[in-house]
Amino acid sequence: MRRIPVKYVTKENLVVLKIKEKKADNGKRCDYCISKGWKGLNYTEEECFTKKREKSKNKKARVEESDSNCTDAEGPSIKSTKISIGKT
Image (cartoon, rainbow, N blue to C red; front, side, top):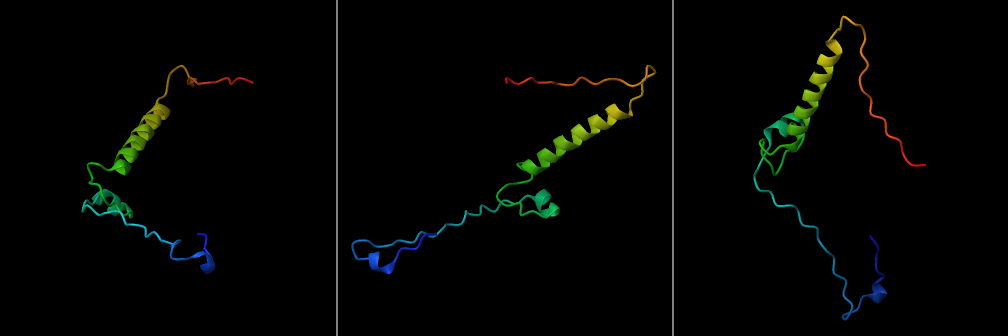
């Protein structure tokens, strides 16, 4: 924050300091986030974005795990790979 020298502060040119207002607490708490060690304020467990994100990560991990556990009689399989070629 830049300080203004006192010699420039006059009755015509007052310096007003702005106080930051705290975000209003609406009383909602997310028990899931609180159990994880986060604040979990201002939203409920149904609205929890952390819970949704972790569910999707768990689903992806289970799918990858089941893919790696599959064994074929033909031997190892080659998964498709997405290759993008950029303009040079």
